[in-house]
Image 1 (cartoon, rainbow, N blue to C red):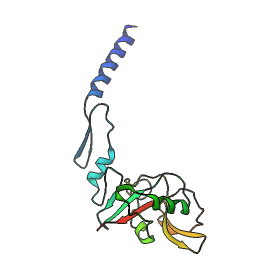
Image 2 (cartoon, rainbow, N blue to C red; image 1 turned 180 degrees about the horizontal axis):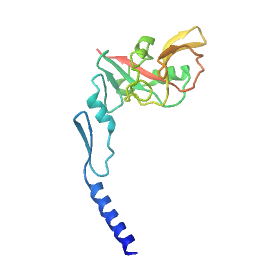
Image 3 (tube, one colour; image 1 turned 30 degrees about the vertical axis):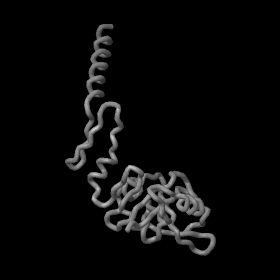
Image 4 (cartoon, rainbow, N blue to C red; image 1 turned 135 degrees about the vertical axis):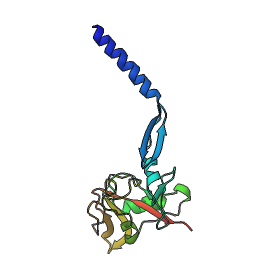
Length: 170
């Protein structure tokens, strides 16, 4: 019984000591700190390393290479019409958002980056992103990040489909 009490007392002391210490995550020599009770934001570490994409506090991701600003839509299966409606109603950071073109969305693809071959700053569980370009009245272009290819499913397609908004500043 004394051994159990001693182990519990040691465990409590160790846990209390470690919880009260600052937590550090380093990535490429850049330290990101969080105090006890704070959530360590690993995206801050990614911001420090990524020379191309930077996200602000509102979730707007700026592509330093193209000058485009991106905003990721709701993380749920979305038809093309729902994506268009969401983008039209988007007023984040002053508005001015639109659906991306085929060429713009393809610029986000980077084989091996993040979970879906894109920067982790584009937080989404979806693999397919709609563009604003249509094919007739029933289909629309999109890009599948898991395989790195564009295609044009029916506008009612929803399987892992997401909406991203884009705008140009300047």
